[in-house]
Length: 179
Image (cartoon, rainbow, N blue to C red; front, side, top):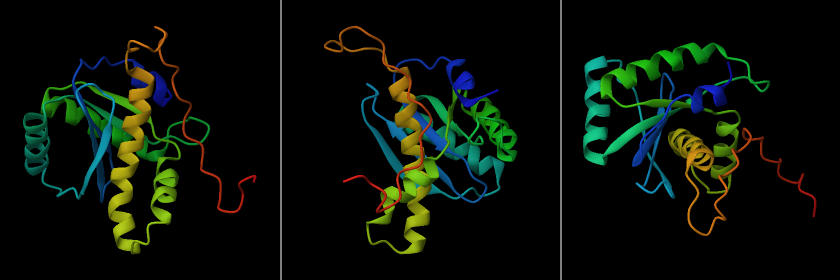
């Protein structure tokens, strides 16, 4: 099963959505506005290993930020097949939905880490700061892709639904651009 089929099988009501780029050591988080126009990365979260503390964090996030649903990045191989992490991420998503009583959709996260690293490359940050921010930038990319594929057309859009984005392709390497 690929990430796009998982993503479209869940309906998230209107309002603010949070994306999670799940990892064992770091979780990136991004949240969009209620109109689903702008997604903003949040500080990276280090999982504590304490399920009660994690539950309290996500419940507080839902309450304080009026979150109506979650989008979880699904790690798949370049050909769209599941990766070893896919099963763990799916378990996390089930737990997240049960814990917060909010719907959870999946979004293909192919190449988001590469894209996030590319975005951070020219900022002059230390390696540690880049690592700390990369997961939240990846969550931002995941949420933006989901919003582009799932937001209803707006007046002035010609009434046509938006075309879903293809999974991210790796950005070109420096010097590989055609000039």
